[in-house]
Image (cartoon, rainbow, N blue to C red; front, side):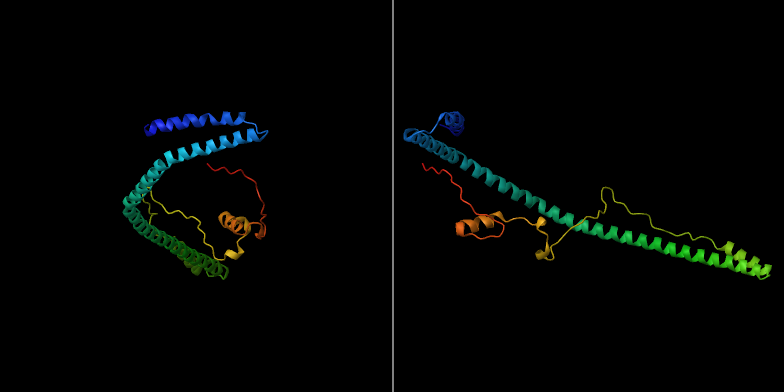
Amino acid sequence: MNNESLIETLSSEALTYPAKAKEIKVRDQVSLDAANAFLRGIKGLLAKIAETFDLIVKKAHEAHRQAIEQKKKHEEPLVRAEVIIKAEILRYLTEQVRIRREAVEEAQREADAKEKARLQKMQAAIDAENAGTPEEAEKHFEEAIAIEPPKPIIPPAVKAQGTSIRKIWRWRVVDPAVIPREFLVIDERKIAAEVGRLAGETRIPGVEVYQQEIVITRI
């Protein structure tokens, strides 16, 4: 029997078991023996399915692992190149943002300085007018008018098609001892190992150890 035929046979047989299981009622030793035999039959069929599929799964897993490794091997130089060029783009864009920000700040300082000088001249003109020196007031007034607003040269915002800088929040643990419990994950594997080692003697705060009865059948 080829592999496909065997799989089909096992599948067809397995499909009959749920209905058969519902018909079995354990009332005495005879029915218990029958139920136990049925359970052993399930175990036997599971073993056949495992034997049939485990090799397929193993081969598929190995093929998948090799495919992933090959994929990573081919992607690695491109990933490395992406990291390098992104770092370079980030350096340039960050520098341009800094240059533009400093130009804007310098333009604002220059504008503030000229506005201050203009207001001082206007105040000097008012003071001269109040002091009865209209000629001097006129002179200060003309000087105030002559102060022109600055014409700053601000570099345009730099843009790269399809690329931009986005700020995202990252995190790192600096003191595990003070992290609130709602952000902690229970290590279930470690707890299970401790319970398996100490059984009823396990003493882990917040953990209750209890026994559960299960049916175990050997072929």
